[in-house]
Amino acid sequence: TELDPADGVRALELDRAHVFHSWSAQAALHPFVIAGALGCEVWDFAGNRYLDFSSQLVNINIGHGHPKVVAAIQQQAAILPTVAPAHANLTRGEAAKRIIAKAGPAFGKVFFTNGGADANENAMRLARLTTGRDKILSHYRSYHGNTGAAIVATGDWRRVPNEFARGHVHFFGPFEYRSEFWSTTPEEESARALHHLERVIQSEGSNSIAAIILEGVPGTAGVLVPPPGYLAGVRELADKYGILLILDEVMSGFGRTGDWFAWQNETINPEHVVPDLITFAKGVNSGYVPAGGVIISESIAREFDDHVFPGGLTYSGHPLAMAAIVASIDAMEEEGIVENAATIGREVLGPGLVELATRHPLIGEVRGLGVFWALDLVTDPITREPVAPATVGLLKAELMKRGLLPFLSENRIHVVPPCTVTAEQVAKALTIYDEAFTAVEAI
Ligand code: PLP
Image 1 (cartoon, rainbow, N blue to C red):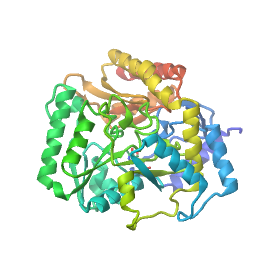
Image 2: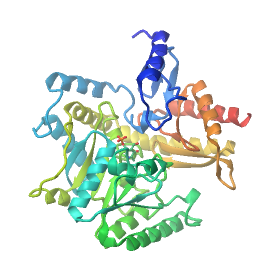
Image 3: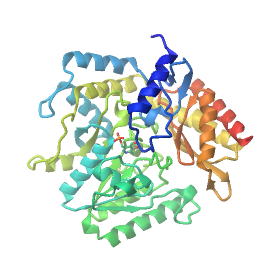
């Protein structure tokens, strides 16, 4: 369709007049107007094109406008666009079957939600009902969603004005670059973080703790790939104290790390430990229609064969979202999209970012895997002092000017393109990052 710059002006005017935005003081906002998108690119109404290295909110794993997913939604809309959750529906069953197949034989059922936050709400509820215990432990460096318990399980600043749910306790997870434990190796960081966790469990009273909830790879907090032994160590502590392990794979799942789930990654989990509950959203259908859910272990699912599950949602298993899940998982398989994320990360994006850091002192650390990377920006590589927000603002402007839509969080750039990104697109992006850093360093 023809692009009309006047529509861009109108989109911004309407937005500023009537739309209330997330996590922001409203007055100073100047949102970027997107007119359309395809693959790894978005464009504005003036026809300027941008490489989407944000994947929007790190959710467009399959890329924008994938024709098979779009067609599946259209077909489903013509057959049955909505249905009550109590009825059985073929597309929902097909979606659940595919998700269980990816999670593996320990898992029995899927409870579908509208997104990631309510997936975590229901996972925590399932853990509390199953164990008869109350407390939920989670990392300070975490984000679990913006609803009652999910925002209080969240560790970052967004929890603090929203602490209306009870029974949440936080602890520090491993983060070698900014260690809370004075560690100097990943192994030491892992061991000390596990010691800290065990002391928190004992001090809180292990019999009061229903679950530990962790992101597969803490994402918004800075792409904190867990060090060797950490996940297996958490599993061991959970088992020792009768606590359930919930893995929040909302951001890290469905291809982002180069595996279907982060916990299935050989580097993260060589011991192959398995969680009790997995939550997902985002990449499961790349957000073409909102959806999330909880993947429930066979044994927890069985608990509810004869006990009522006290929870539900009008749109649990919404047919349009389910059609998008089925088509998305099938297309990811047919087109080797998860494998592409792994290969690109290992061979092109990771090495390219490491090389970029050698030329730019602003980049203190590069960390990540697959298409899930963070550049930790510092004023001084020795003290690791985070750069000021103004520096990040300048970088954003320089990146946008050169045609790259970035993902920014605190003092970091998260490099998170769709899993379908090509080596050519990565090369182009690396040149843009390079030029933008050079421009900002010259200021
Ligand atoms: N969990 C994680 C790890 C997330 O990154 C997010 C969103 O960014 C959520 C949960 C919340 O998902 P939603 O915004 O779909 O509710």
